[in-house]
Every structure is written in structure tokens, then in C-alpha cells.
Length: 456
Image (cartoon, rainbow, N blue to C red):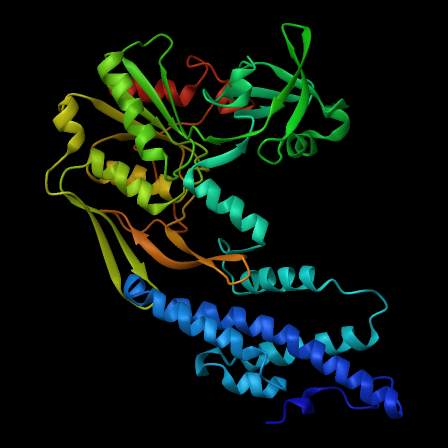
């Protein structure tokens, strides 16, 4: 097959004459080759990664070496067809290359604007993920990839607060202040309302723009104005790297034997925070019941949720991971038995709160406790994400997350696209649902009240 034959004939596009035509064609050809090379390298690595899933740890170094050699070889090809013929058989999706070559040809020869190649590659890569139908996949720029990896570790750069939009003014309302963050050191408190950032009004900037303005690089300063009890205060904070508090423990305001452990997300620092929250609740405050609040929890890393379930569950299967190549991997609770019972006995009752935004790893946590009859589930049907993504670093610092496996809970069927139905279904009242969960008092929270009642 001569790939050049797929280009338009001369009567379909403006003709070029003599030396101009030869020079223009050469430039176009080089530009197209570079673009296709970048695109092909991405596809080649994706396919390589899928093939290596079965023996990932054993073969990782070898495959990375082979991948590097292929990247180096790209510059040696003199034509698109040579590059195409060098690709693995399974990567030769002719329609993809043909369509991309057509579009690139038109833009390189007749587009009246300028092409930003960096933006072009970024959008093409994300378009591929979307076109593949992977609703949970994503291509990351180098900066985005660094941030994502940092978030997975449980680290973040900022001032250390959780915020919501103030319902009355659309300013930034501080809902929670992390204990080791710059905001805590500066004396900010839950309930404070940020009205200005760097002298600019939050309402004029817009809520999300103002939040982005508060973010920034580690060690840099940000000036904010906030109101407390009608009095305005001004403070300059130094942004810092902090360990995100992904687990927040509170003792019930009126039912003092109930500990409420809210899990915001599952990252690498979550298990340690989770175990410490349980220790405080049971050993320090003497709580006899625990409510794990997973409402709004989008999930996180599989390793963190497995470690937490291993702590709570007796010996047995925690999760079964099913990969695209048909292989399976089981994660089980250790043979020593249930660590939680060894520390705190068998009398502690548990409940899990869920809603439609409880997803992924949070659903596995919920379903595993339900399967082993360790907790009663209260609230609303969960999101329904029983699949997981592999994260791949690419050679230029960018990264790719794409769906590579399904995971099954210990006993129940996979809940992907289905969700988990609570033991006790309960919706928030209209008044309560109009507020952020952070801002709900315990006695306003209908779902929490239902959970407390179920534990009696």
C-alpha cells in the first residue's frame, strides 16, 4: 500500500507550482511525519503496557528498555509508511493513521491560523482516550501528571483547608482547617468567609477563579481577606506542601458513644490516618459505635483501600482484580485474622454512609463490609464504578491513566454501572441537601441520624 495515495488529488486542493510545490510538499511531509511519530509512540506504549499486565513487575524493566529503543528509532524513519510498517501488528489501525494524515495535510497546507504543536498533541491524546470510550481515562500534561502523582501520595501544596461556596454571598466559606497547614498556623477557623484574594473580590473573580488564585507554588505568598462574626481580617499566608487530611474524626454532638469517621478519599496516607481515627474514637473517647462516612468520596488507590479492609476484615478475600487479558489477581486479608478485633474486641458496631457520589474504592470499602456483615450501609445507592485504571508515565514527563481492569468485591457481583444498594435507604431532607455535608450539624443530617438509629 502506498500511503501517499490517500492524499487528495490535485483537482481537490489548490495546486502548487514548481519549486514552491516541491518545498511545500517536503515541509508538509516532515511535519506530518513528526506528528504521526508522536501519535504512534503513544499508541505503541499503550499496547505494550496492556501486553505486560500479566507479569508486570517481572517484565517492567525489559519493556521500558524496548520502548526507549523504539522511541529512539522513530527519528530514523524517512516516511510515514516506513514508520507504519515498523509498528506492531496489533497497533496498525489503518483508519486512525489515514484520517489523521488527511486532517494534518489540510491544516499544514491551507490553515489560515497558526498551529501550537504542544496543544495539538495534548488534545489529540485526550481525544483518543475519549474516542476509545474510556470515561475514566485521561492523558495528563507534565504539570498535571506531577500534581496527580502528588495527590495520590496524599501530598498537596496550598494553605490546608476544605472549602465550599457560601450560600448567601458566593464567597469562599472555610469548612475545615487542616491541623498542620498554613491556614491553621495563621488562626483561620471553620466558618470564616474569604471575601478577597490578593485584593480582588471573590464575587468579582468568581468562586472557582478565586480558588485557583489561592493555589500556587510551594513557598510563595498569597494575601486573603476573610470575615468572622462580621469583622474583616487580612492575612498573608505562605503556601506549603502538606499531607492532606483525607480522614476526619468527630465525636457525635449528642450521641457521645458514636464516633464519626469521614473518609474524603483513598490515597497512600489514608490508611494510617484511618487507624489513628479509630484509635482516638474507641480508645480515647470510648465510642461503642463507628460511622464511616463515605458520601462524596470519589475513590482513590486500590492499595490503600485494601490495607484498610485488611485491618477490619477477618481472613478471606478482599477483592478480585480481573485484567483485560483474562488473568486474575486476588487480594486477601492476612492469615493472622482480624486486626481490628484483636485491638478493640468484637463489640464495636459499624455503619457506612453512602450517596450517589460514593464511587470506586469507596464502593469496594462499602461492599466488602456489607458482604462480611461487618457494617450496615445507610443512605443512597452508590455511583457504580467497579473498574480501575493503570497509570503510565511517558518519556516526556506526561502521563496516561486508562482502564485496564475490573474488580469484584468479596462475595457480591461486580457493581460497575450498577451501584450498591444500602441496607437502609435514606435521602437527605430538602433543607439538608441544600447545604454542603461539611456544614451540616449532626442533628440536621437525616442520613447520619438513620445510621445512629440502626446501630442502637
